[in-house]
Length: 289
Image (cartoon, rainbow, N blue to C red; front, side):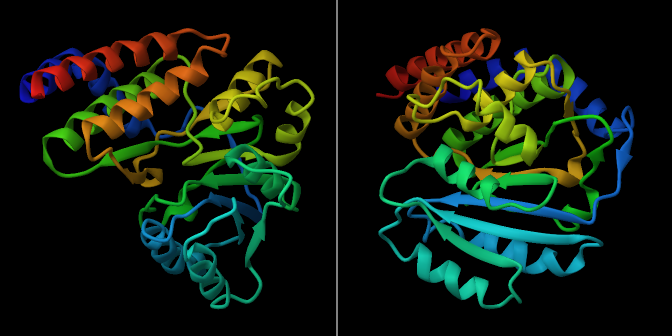
């Protein structure tokens, strides 16, 4: 049953996947870029001791290869595992360019962590990464900063082994294909570039503080409503990898969270597609029992 759903999903997605490959070949040649001397990377985290290792190794390999200064700011959201000790040791390897900040007891959640990071950034551009991603070699050298633009959406890829992770990887690839070949409707905080002052300016308009997740999508939504320019850079050399859900239950919960935040957005397309795939996942779930 699961294998059959994957085959159907693959066939349905072939046109969009073909356009995605074509967009990767074009890279971001349709807009002009500027040179920047600095960039701040923000990594919000909570209890990521078991998953943050690949990102730390990626940063360890890449931070000394950049032609501009890269400042990394980890923001702890009340971790109770060994994450903070692990990151403190990582910070000690660098000469002040990698720092750790923590949320106070009066605030919590990924949105608050990203906000604290942006408030502590002194650079024009900010890049958010999830704590469980892996970066490709030469990553920072391929980032492009647009002359005109407030946000640049970078590609994210889910990976994993086995049928279930293969299903969710293919599904997420379809989301990415639609994003990079059609309209701008999906941003992913696992690999997202934006201007710090525009992020702060959007705070005056955003009304999603009561929604637990969706910092990336709500920021994109508000930037579009305020007529700011949002770019896409489908360069395959910027693809960050993250692990796909390992179980049907984990994947279904993730899609429910997506739908939960998307019903608050002005653009319905992501919600409808997410609901469609959530329904497919339910079918797979029932068939696997």
